[in-house]
Image (tube, rainbow, N blue to C red):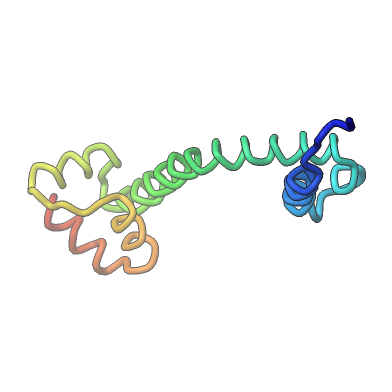
Length: 114
């Protein structure tokens, strides 16, 4: 008696991976084993970089805040310390946006904590 294999499930599984590999270059897009490895690697990168994105944005916000407070004779750390001391609870994302897009509002905050 022939061996029972679930060809339907196998084809569906492979189609799913090949669909994810669409747009890849060379054999990565149309050869099963190469595509499978490429998609697995891409998913690992995607998982890792969803976490790295948070770090990267926080670093960007810190740079923007620091650049925003320097003209007023403050450093980033002194400014953040003064914010905490004055009980002003604005997060770094909002402060960075104010420093970049609304300098007059940012200046008012800096003058308040000085």
